Image 1 (tube, rainbow, N blue to C red):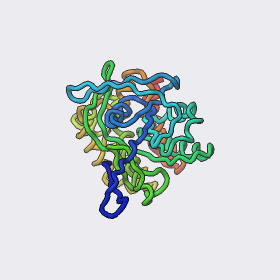
Image 2: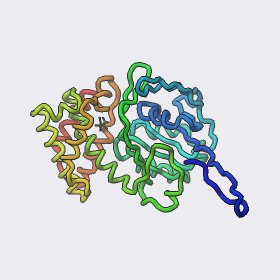
Image 3: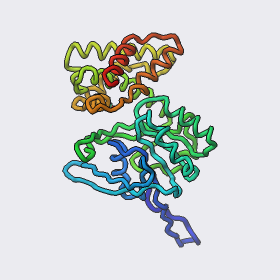
Image 4: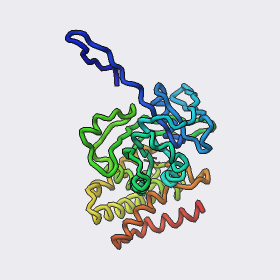
Length: 308
Ligand code: KPL
């Protein structure tokens, strides 16, 4: 947002600059670090686990290495608190900051998976915190390599209000740079959920890059069978994203062919995966409808065993 003009007296414009957005970031992994790089000219603060250290960031963008230290949030007013932790860590990471949250206007969750958005909405209401809750879906490409995060591919960061339609008042909110407001964020999240529910567990189980799911005929069969199973659940739930879902998963596997999915990276580094908020979430809603997901169930169980 650039400067805007208002007229103090006819013919005498008074230059008004918008104060820079104050943003706090919780979760400075690959995506959080890339967003910090996008917002490097703004006054950023970090919400570290120990609640007092500054955070050192290193992001490699093409051949350039960007390094910055973000101070720890002391409870000063924030326009946006952006949460990029793993879905399962949301509540544990946020709760220690409870007393500062009255100073936050908007909370934005940008994570894989579903279920955590509503859990947070319920918690904010229970705590009587008036922050506006937003959910986001990112297609930025980034991965951790040694001591740095590598920004591997530019993507979109779509955001929308959680649990409600976008209003005129929301459109008037100044959103963080490199984000775009959409009216159908829940739909975007459901499509991404299906993509992650197919590509992530399969690549983790088969230990392959995303593109091999298309190139290897046996893997390709599994890809299509799993996508078809999930499209069936979406159709049963009346979710319009069911249409074209199998093709959409294929397109994303092709577009991210050289990627190691985030779940494969987690498994290879012995980290907890996001599958409970991806496959686990789908299995829970399928069970509520008595809808069987045999392929998803088997894959989820096997991967639980691998990462347990
Ligand atoms: O979101 C992804 C992930 O790995 O988590 C995809 C889209 C599958 C790209 O790798």
